[in-house]
Length: 265
Image (cartoon, rainbow, N blue to C red; front, side):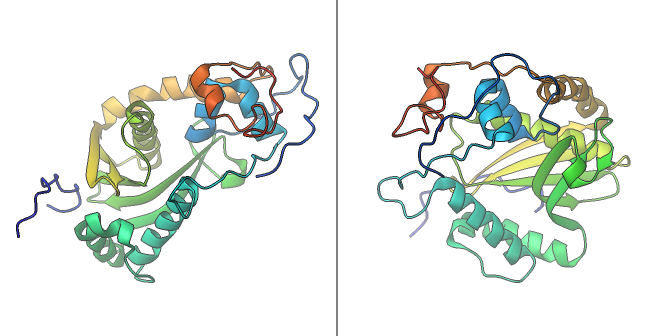
């Protein structure tokens, strides 16, 4: 029986804790900026609510344990980590293909083959200093992780990020991630002229691709300089309550939150 699923385009590769006593939070600006580094995910939290970022990054207040969603056996973050680990093992020929990878069987087999050929880097942890040069991970100003980098030639590369979460509603966030991936890739590999960034939505059987040329991609450096600089130079961390942000904040009123924030909506 013929499949009723519409074919998608192929990849470029192939042809917590319980509520606790709220900590003392500065009533005004601190003297020294406490956040020395940023990643895209931590920047997103900072830009949404500086107070939540302060609780998580500076005071390191643990998030409360969450009940499993109805009908689920693991949380989304745990599932994402498990699938990412399994994908890496498979590409390295050290593990079996997980069920979540089956929509992309052809692509993962291609990655596995190219890894053996030495043209794929896996689970890269890229540290970047304030001048956008390479830096040790622990000392880096910007920390970026990517699932796979394929060097198609001396001048062309494909950056791949596996997604197990939702696509709908995350389009802007994911597009920004792709933008940051391409920028750091161009700066890390001066010979590259073209960078393709692919998001593999493993559950949706979809691929989102953006292609950048060097002269286009490097234009975004100033914007990321400004955004990352605001976070790593911040000395004041006011709350920014909103219905959407407070709904999912782990530090809101108990019992869902830790009770550390009194400004929640």
